[in-house]
Image (cartoon, rainbow, N blue to C red; front, side):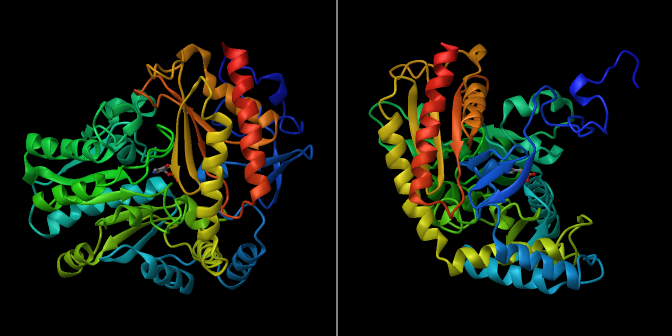
Length: 461
Ligand code: PLP
């Protein structure tokens, strides 16, 4: 034992059922123990049921008990759980790549499998850098990303990320990256400016930053297609990404889209960028790819990039032990096939519209709700102290944390966060329920969330 350290009483011994040796995310929180999944519900050790209104963190797109996915995992594990990708390819990886490329944006032809979102982003960053080495544009070392973004917690992903709170302790380790403003119409659109005018102005910040850095020093611009957990779902306005694509093309800068959260059907189309009418050079996916049944992520890559590697050094200087894991690929393939065969994206759009309508009905006139936004089953609610000035709530009230606690008490999992308005202040709730959610459950979600928000504000103000 470190001198002076005592285990808290509830963690006194590993033999004590209340005790633990698991180093948790939040040291002081006492969490219920999840023991079973049942459709859109998670059940804890006391038998309490929680409606999963956020799929954890936008992960569980098929809920928690899909028997086809479970069988696919069992079958694969019985045949071959793992074979190192330095020695073998595998059928599940081949089949999953075929499936993904069949639905991928124009020009995307190759899949580099990883085990999660941060790994997919790290791979994309290195791939962009090595691509420019392969084609002899060696001065292109810089990345431009956006404030109020999140791309993962590994050092490369954190460096390009724009989540001020998550970056702060590790600033000395981070590689240099530029950040422009996000596309955040609620806070950044000027009075009298149309959404489209605003979108072009926001995108033109990229042009200015490329010029400032020197166009031939910039490797890539990276953005979440629909902003996720940092500011509470930021859908781009019409025309924003078309202008971004034009700017990237003009300067030979790669466009990397992070669809770790917003991709794989979450917004109602397989790739979120389909709705923006553009195709990236690399698109990263994870969470909804395996739906939480197995850990898996991927960077999907254009034929143009791949060709440079094939015609150049012949390898990508990267890799992880568990990349292309056969059991994870088999699970993800089963998840994706289920979404296709059951036409679950139609349900995402239907329930997404209903969720939006119900949220506006329950919270649209609420004195502390500033904005309700999103696409498909990916919705964000931003709270404010004052609707006219859009002044965020007092930081010390910790309203987002209170909402989470009240929702859990009432049997609802939602994903509240803070710091979205300006990097420090701002409270929001992110919703991302499973694609299998039914109308009655969507109604329950909104009812419990509304009550939890009311209770949190009553306790705080
Ligand atoms: N990118 C986005 C947009 C995310 O939301 C996340 C996780 O929340 C990541 C990357 C990192 O993914 P992971 O937590 O699987 O490493």
